[in-house]
Image 1 (cartoon, one colour):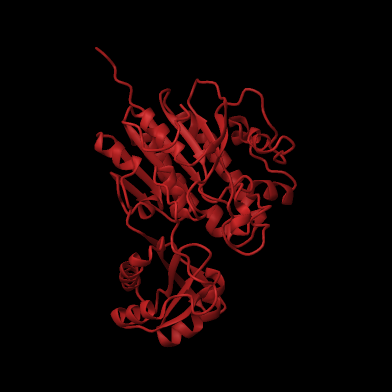
Image 2: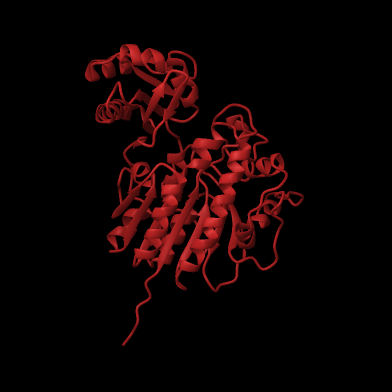
Length: 397
């Protein structure tokens, strides 16, 4: 009897864990950013023994011979192949980064709204208000935490939508769950998504919160409504070939469900860790695509280097527990979608290289160098599953 290997590919995106400014970072105002490097310096060195053994400390010297990651030195004989990736798409947001990993390059990028009031076009706001039956307040670029602190009390009195943007291509809608029910908030986002499509806006995001003035808290009921995918991705190709495509975290929202056979939706690292462990244990053959969002949402945007470091160390321990569950024919990729340097100016994403670690149990690691495009992941997945090649990218297999 012939035994057929049941191979899994697992992609774990450590959301916003950049590893040094990209060559074009200056075009985005991000020259000098370095999420991992600056966090490591700020906390007196990172303690990441598992990622260190995989080869994380070997990546900074690829970018510059004199660079090191404090607390995570280069290691001889790393368990995984290691490298760095630079993004080809225009932008530094979640959707752009994930889509490029799946083989879609956004050469022109998504539409960005101006930071100053009013950020959104008058006709868009007028139609949004007409169709939802509620007025809007905000209409500027802002930190999500700060704008609900500023305008949450007024919303509780008037029932108006809080709408705001950021440095990313986003139309965000914040609403107190006791004032505007979740279903109505999601319906409002669906209307905004339809209105934003002609502008090619990357995401409409539901930002629900609870609490009283002076003590508001965002809830885990966030939802992202992505711009419709302009073409097929490697996820679609894997699914068409008859394999499972399992999403963890907010991956289902990012890809608007396209190419996905099963989804575990969550909005925290803890929930994603639980669901990823379940998926690794129960998925037969196919792709598992996971996002750990807390690095970006809780620590990068809030400029909390110590919290970011603690979350990295928690993820390192988790990865150490996950690796023994991998089969001998599996492939485990650890990477990121952009940077969000908590020591940098502002509160937005940073245009950075991202780390690339590729573990194949029992196979020695090697230097993958600097990859010219995140779409090398898509090409590698096509190779891994013996599918026709993707239009772009170079397989690192």
